[in-house]
Each structure stands twice: as C-alpha cells, then as structure tokens.
Image (cartoon, rainbow, N blue to C red; front, side, top):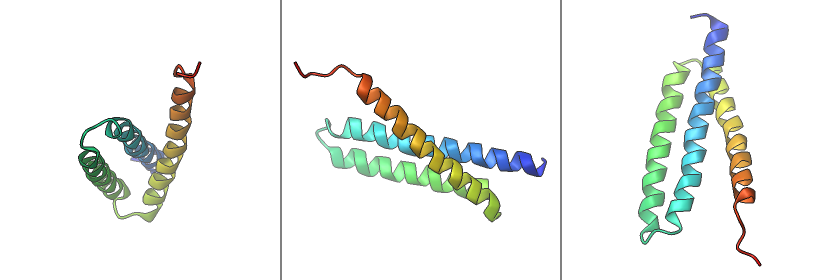
Length: 98
C-alpha cells in the first residue's frame, strides 16, 4: 500500500477504536446504573474495551510512531463525536418534568 493510504487507514482505525471505546462506555453506564450488580458491568466493560483498544493500537501502529499518533488522533476525534451524539440523544429524549 502507499504511504498516504496507510496514514488515512490508521486515522480511520483510530476513529473506529474510539467509537467502540466511548460508545461502549456510554452503553455500559446506561446499563450499569440500573443493574443489580453494576460492578460486574463496569469491570467487565473496562477489561473488554481496554483489551480491544490496546490490541487495536498495537496492530495499527506496526512499530511506526507516525501511525500510532494518527490512530490516537482518530481515537480522540471519536471521543468528541460520541460526546456530541450522546448529548443530542439525551436532549431529544422526552423529559419527565411537568
């Protein structure tokens, strides 16, 4: 593959990893607060999300710091996108206030 394509793919992979990580965190919080055993939800989710994310960073980087940096950039951008989307979802849900 060409070098520019590798750079773009590393950024996209980082965005996907970030979406998985932060989307999974949002989902876990929603499920965990209503669960009778929230500690299991939070611990299990943390282990799964961290394992997948760290393995993804390892495989995407391929021992090149430039690819790792772009993957981290995509990951960070995904954080803001997930925050924005969850804020929209929260604001569009019907309120229970009279």
